[in-house]
Image 1 (tube, rainbow, N blue to C red):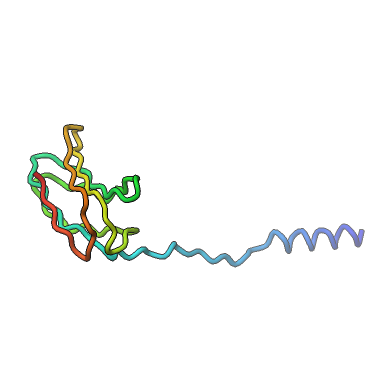
Image 2 (image 1 turned 45 degrees about the vertical axis):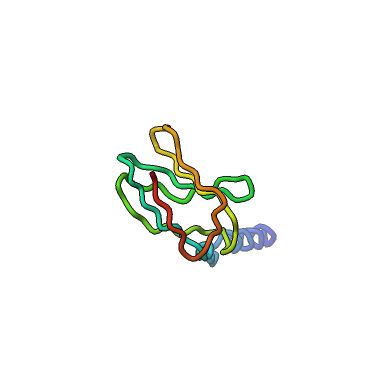
Length: 108
């Protein structure tokens, strides 16, 4: 009987409330950015290609200018900028761009 009571106490203690700490991931700060002007009558998806892989930056609405921080790319990195219209029509590329604090790019 004592063993049963002891087991019950241990079981209840193990199933009791626990203190849990919940945190979010640290934010990534962007060292570089694109000042992007979309002069098209349709939205475009903006990408930065570095090392052979495309990094999605943001979708920019038609006839809009936006400041696009680019997390994960360091200043001085040579990249290709891509803008792909959301309707799948021909996109725009600008290769050999050295990323800095602010790169200006306008399409078309």
